[in-house]
Length: 256
Ligand SMILES: C[S@@+](CC[C@H](N)C(=O)[O-])C[C@H]1O[C@@H](n2cnc3c(N)ncnc32)[C@H](O)[C@@H]1O
Image (cartoon, rainbow, N blue to C red; front, side):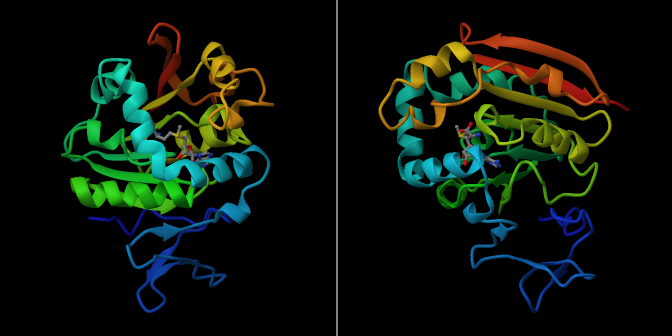
């Protein structure tokens, strides 16, 4: 069941309330509406709101979205299958039945289906194409997932709304990585586990030479696991090297 009490205006930080007549979440002070579409997907921003690297990556993912699932399956077949390969990092995220969990940049929902189904998942992504594919996966696999189109750098959730928060595979190319991490920590409850995993510089250098797939990796800054961007209110920081140095996996907890 979607929780109506956890939403906030990503632009002003004010609480939102659900307006049944207008079919969406509304800021009662400004009247700004964030609509739910006919599938129940909430829209807090569109591709046109993205700037800098976010805009380029959204253009890429919108085009690639219909092929993302197939591409991932092929890629992960090199690592013993998708479920096993995703567990290389998901093993660090301890989810309990009944937890409310947020995946920032949910993509097509591939991580969600590898996690315990007894939790309540929320997924945000900036790419309408990825959200569209994720919705199809959610229907097909009956995933316990609420979807919205939003930017990781301004989350539409109130402080301390989630029991666990994670992100996989996009942060290296975000326009503002520090803001995204600050937001992930803000919406986590005190004591909640957080996880951030993405490709290492070594792998990105290989990818950037590929036609089409290499596009988002060209012209980027050198990739460094974002340990220095963590805010002071986190504890138990650990950095793991996953899959023989292909991925970094940064785990930490929000301080109590
Ligand atoms: C490599 S995919 C990873 C998807 C999924 N997490 C997975 O592991 O399969 C990266 C995702 O990040 C999303 N993304 C990129 N910039 C974003 C931003 N600023 N806010 C939210 N999502 C973003 C892309 O649309 C894309 O779906």
